[in-house]
Image (tube, rainbow, N blue to C red; front, side, top):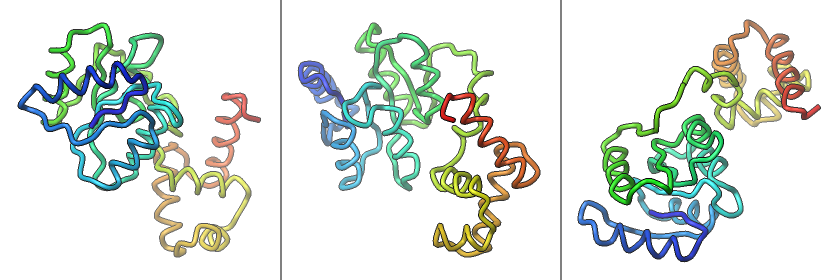
Length: 200
């Protein structure tokens, strides 16, 4: 499936994939919401998306899809400017191809990603894990925000409509991902992270 906001580019890409027998193009979308809606309605194994896909954008789309059980593997096809390949990898994409690359490169990357490989241009991956917040699931992020309000496990259970045992399970995962030992450290981490992003 293709997600591309530029109509000319979407038409050209559709023709390229339709001509290649290795692929079966099931749908196209001009917005992130449209892409998401299609994926929810039909099985899609592989998606090629523009990083600047209108409305949600590529990063948010990848994040939302990551929470789905049968989400397609995604290749980001975009201008290789700034830090986009690194951001795409950190968001959870399986591959990145610059628009300046050949059509063959795009197709070969899609074949490799469909086989379960990760395909990115050379990246220094040491910086990818610098922000542990990025590794949290949507549920864990919600829990961390609720935790930052000073709620007890019982209150978290009520607020999130989950059992006390599930709260404990999520907290344990949360502490491990943030490399903290207790809720006080997790809350301190949350506020320090917000301050570093200028969200205070």
